[in-house]
Length: 231
Image (cartoon, rainbow, N blue to C red):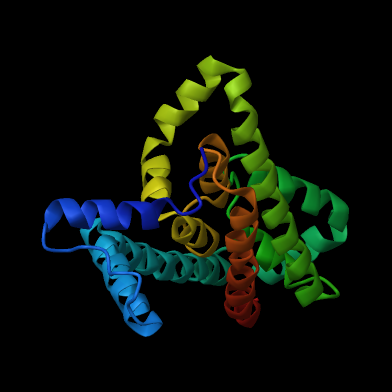
């Protein structure tokens, strides 16, 4: 079953159950009125499903994460050791393909290492923004691989059931909010690989997933703009 338009299907059914006075607009309604009515229904659905509070809380957490990350690095750099020198040493010691391979694995398997560390590493490379673009691409591809793994887990029922139980909350939100939850996973501090895995598990429309996941590039650009100023 595809879930590409799941939230829009639920919009009418939920609102109808909660308010018997709400009915579908007749086919003769002007396009502008139909759009306004549809937007109002969608807006109310997101309010009922508590999407807006979730988005607000997650955005606040994202701001806190970046501030704490930068703060920790500045404190460690000031009191303990020279982070600039450390990052420069890492760039000189490990070849870029090795670092990109490690990051791809991390972004495929539950986001094991925070992307911010790799972004800080790229700031000391000879081509920071190009390396940042490559990191974003590795993250995007890692999500695609996670989607594929989730999509194939039905071949191992025991593993599939175990993972579904572990990420049940992500699956529930994905079914309620569709592509917007993929967007949140791409932009905010929710493991992108876990959201991608959930997409594969419920067989969320792959083309829609690929489009929403492109926001991963925007996240790396925004984080890079901040981190590059520090390092």
